[in-house]
Length: 193
Image (cartoon, rainbow, N blue to C red; front, side, top):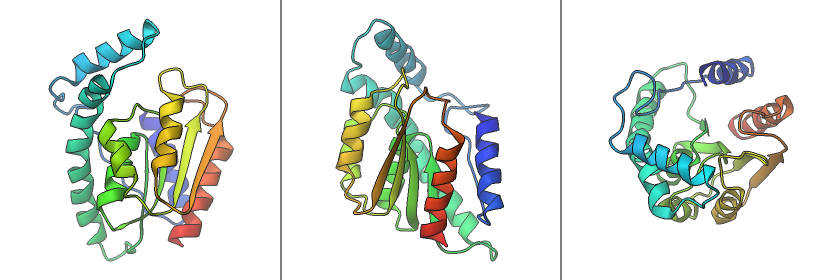
């Protein structure tokens, strides 16, 4: 994932945007989140047998990550926005759509969001989506075998934003076409200046 994040950050910087990323809770060298590895194994088992993962399983996998990551993002925003060279408008672009959805729902500093519809969605995220009114650019990889396309479409429909775009492309989870990234850059340029 690191090379993709660096490429996205460099693309943002080339457009004149400051970019910051934080290591997700439980990832890299961080302490694993309790119960998440078992939930991930249960999800993989369900997908491999053709079963639809239940809502409780999705909650066990995604909510611990979201519950810890969102406050960490808010602390990061506090620190970054204190820098004199950083403007006031903030865009969020991220891969775990539950994190981006909650952050956009509760933090008024987020002026626009580019979200990747590439993960299962907890029940509470559907409710939080109804609170999101900022401009959205949502990317969906149509053939992402590890995710629920119908759930992604339901979440997109749940967002209350009056300006929201869904860009669906053929290909798997890591097969995002270059032009899709360029579309996201134009989206942020329009909304962040």
